[in-house]
Image 1: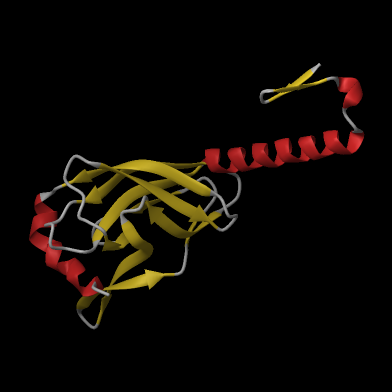
Image 2: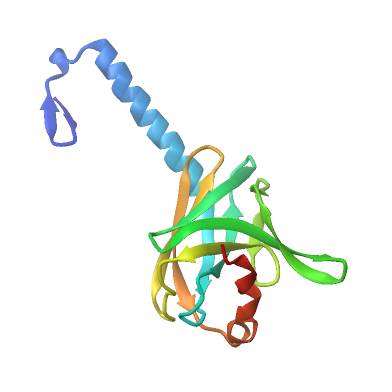
Length: 172
């Protein structure tokens, strides 16, 4: 007797096409779980800003433990933000400017740190500013269609208080 979920089936009643379909689903789910297991998110946090702000930033380290590179094509943050974009900070003509990135690649066996003053996630169009100590679920969307998620702690930092006006340029 084979048990699948809550349903029991006698092996003699299972057709070969049905078994093939179940096997295909099982192996595709196993491959998806294996891919997302090789991508880990650590040190995940969201910057707390004054409640009048409609945007904030998230920071984390993406670790690719796999044998092939991965590409991050998007992100989401619960129902907190209308959208989440990948941004980087660059010096252009003596001024620091933020630019949106279409994607972000992490080579096999490497990690990428998203940190203040560099590459980061912008949470745009916030329904409300999360408070320090709250948590937010952040998910990264991979080019394969998979998502890798982690819980981010909302932190209020001295640097965040001093530079919160930096994010006002993202008003949309």
